[in-house]
Structures are given as C-alpha cells and as structure tokens.
Length: 217
Image 1 (tube, rainbow, N blue to C red):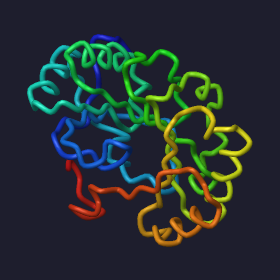
Image 2: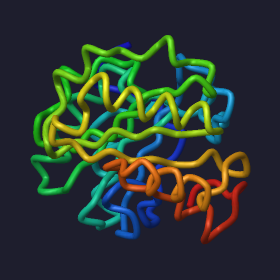
Image 3: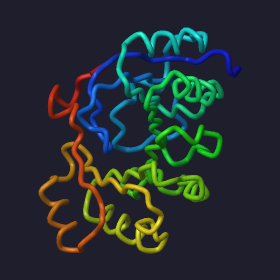
C-alpha cells in the first residue's frame, strides 16, 4: 500500500470521547482495517470497506472541519503506511494531533509531536498475547496508555502490568476504561481507590451522549 493514499472509513467532527482530551471538539479520521479481533470491539464496522483517497485530500477534508484537535483512529490506523506522513502533515498545519492505536502496531515511526493513545490489551480482549511491549520504549510523557477492562481478572492484570512494567514511573498517563455493559464504572472506581492505583478512570463520553450503538459521532 502506497503512502500517498489511505483507505478511509469516515471523516467527521464531534467531541473527543476518551483520553485526557475528552470533551474537546475533535475531527476524527477513521481508517479502514484492523489485524486484531478484540472480543469487545465496538468499531467492527471499520474492519472492511471504506474508500481509497489521496492523502492530500484526506488532509484537506480533516482541516476543513476546523477543530484544533484531530485524531487518527480505526480500525488500526498504523497499518496503513500513509498514516505516518499524514500525522506529520496535521502537526505541520498547527493541529493538536492524536493517534489511537492498539499496542500491537509499531509506534516507533509516529511523529514525536503526536499524542499516542495506546491500548494494552487485557486478557478479556482475547488479544493480550499480541501486545508489542517494545512500544513502551517509544512513549513519552505526552502519551497515554489505555486499558479496557471487562471484569475483575482484567483489572488484576492491569494492576500487575503497571507494577511489573513500572508504567507509573514512565511519566505517561494511565487510563482505565470499562467495556460498555460488561463492567460497572462504580466497581472499577472502588477497586482503584482500594488499591490506591495511579490511573485515570474514564467513561466513553460519546456513548453517554449518543448511546452505545451510534456511529459517526
């Protein structure tokens, strides 16, 4: 796949639903395709289809929506070679740029100005064996690690991973999310308080606003 085109599922403006940027107006560029199949995936519609678009047009359409914040997401956006120059071009245009990535894809080529929101897959996803641990060496204090948790076993895995990998000493923001409809945020908050865990508990704001099944918002 060439760097001058991207297969795009959708481009739209909304508010950021997760991360420390939650609630801010944001343009989303959602690319097609993912090499993981998490049990709880809520964007399976982006696995296939989409439209191949020249990278320059993708940039133009993203900038035209006028939000200071732009996120490249998927699917898994870093599977497409064109995503790396696009991220740099969005930064060059003065935008604050996020990329949401699975933790399996190599993040070493991402422009250092970009805020990487990187998942570490817990056992409940069915994909925890795919975590690329070497990615941790390419994270900086501007980046964030997200854990999506389905149950107490996932929480215990997160807690031990933070301890064993000394994630709270890396300067990155640690995010803990519940699988929608599987784990109660109240339970998660209590576990975090009981353990004194240094994580930011978050909910998927876009689902709170528009509902769990809404797309393109």
